[in-house]
Length: 323
Length: 297
Image 1 (cartoon, rainbow over the protein chains, first blue to last red):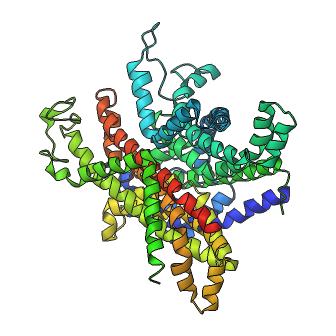
Image 2: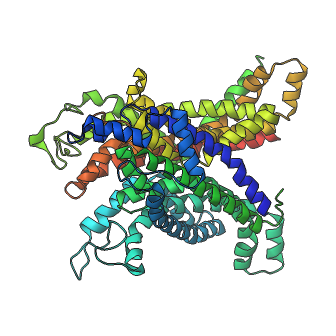
């Protein structure tokens, strides 16, 4: 199993190389270049810019620059931000836990709601509950996350006020109230971002699980379990769900990039200090070491999560053998 | 051949009849038709989508301005109609592009197998594991600065980059279908009769994949519209003053405390369009499903 995970990881390395080359050449051949804002600044002389170009190695041929950057990446150094003059490693390291907190909590909430909804819908198909859920899931699947986020802000921040204090009902900016810290405060700040991020996923996974359950319920082992007098809960959760959930694991692994993409929107809207927000700010300032660094780190995170999903699949389905 | 034709027609007719049996899919077609026509006839509006009229800003809905006006005094209804042109066109064209690319990759991969399959699928997997929104933002931020003249148009860029990062899903789907279909008797028969690879792929196998490809096309289009709007919302898609639903939403975000209605309408348009497309996809799936079962027997 360990060798399998290692091999999967090694297979993805050429991919990372190719994409990093394409992106690097794209951002470095774009006109203007990383020092555009410095050039527009009247207080910066031409000599200073030339000195800076020399210092940052921007005059070297592109393959040399790429080689230097990649060499740094391989030894765990993503370079320095052009705007902030700080190591990108440090800047990303500050943001990763926040993104993982947002994505992790959203993912947990998604599973905790999507699995029961999917199972209950399949248990009583074409019931009122099923129809209601089908409609809600269609709505949830079609709402763009950025519009949902804005809507939540209008409802819970602008419109609804806390009856005791007259303050907005739920916070919408950042991770903590100014001057406060602590887990409870952060969780309170997570409510709206997590709602915005999970709704679409709850819709999508509960619908998928419903159809997957419907397929499984026709199987012989379900009939056998019923005939042996197993309780409904045992039949549905123990026998049916443990088989129906397998395709869901594959699907989740494929959807991980989209989950991070959703997090980027949510972080932008709710000023959540995660990697997505860092990336967005860097894209506006065209701070390419941060941009490339975040892409590399996110790709590695997704690959790691993919391998974890594969291993989870093997754990859930003993028939799967890793070669 | 002539005796085969009537049954072929009736099959298409059966599928259309089945599709409209799905009532919500029928309604969705009507809704989408209204949206397309309204965008096409956007010029009928007495207002301009881009001309500013600062004395008239932040109007709420009224008989003159159905959806009110924005921070520059522009009529939001008119901007949404013009924005619909761009958003729908980007959705449709990038879907065509990504499906075309996906079908070619999937067909080659599934039909030939072997090393062709290995190479193409490794590339496909690579694109799938990649956080495409990050790449889209980088492309959006840098491509429009390139000196290639036709890349100056941000709409063209957005269409291409959305398609470039969405073809993997149809490719995997088509590959799966080809893997099954290439083993069937009618393929062996054509091969025995001397049919070329191209002929077998295009004339014999591909027509059997139409249903799933159409369904996946609806999913692609829904996600393309959401991606375009999202990209424009973040400021890296179609550039102002060209209105798209996403860019209207983006300017509305700054005014969300002052004039929340500006954010409401463009988002509603995206939502309604995507929902309609999803329902059409659902209807198509139902319409084609029994046909697939029938073909398997």
